Length: 115
Image (cartoon, rainbow, N blue to C red):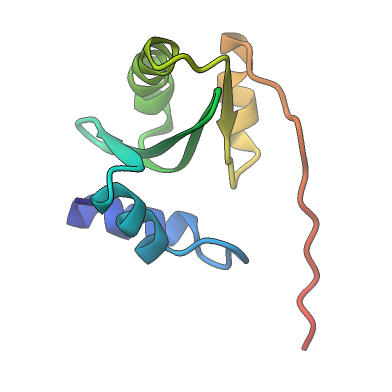
C-alpha cells in the first residue's frame, strides 16, 4: 500500500508525466511487483525488473533519500541479484546529488505537447 504522504509526493513528482500515474504505482505495490521505501521525511518507489532495480519517483527530502534510502535500496537490489540501478529522475538536481555515489545521466526524454 502507498501511504497518503507518498501518494501526494508521487503525484507531485509525476505531474505531467506522459507514461505513468500514481494509480499505476499503487497497483504494482499492491500486486507485489514494487515496493515503497519510506524514511522520516521521504518516500521512494522501487521495482525490480530482471537485473535492474528501478528507483523513482521519489518525494521528500533529497538529502535523506541520498544518504539513507539509496544505500539501503542498493543493498536490497544486490541481494535480489540486480546488477544495475536505474533512477527515473524528473529533476536535474538528482544527478548532482547522486553523482558522488557513482550515478550518471544515461538518457534524456524530450517532449512536445501537441495542442
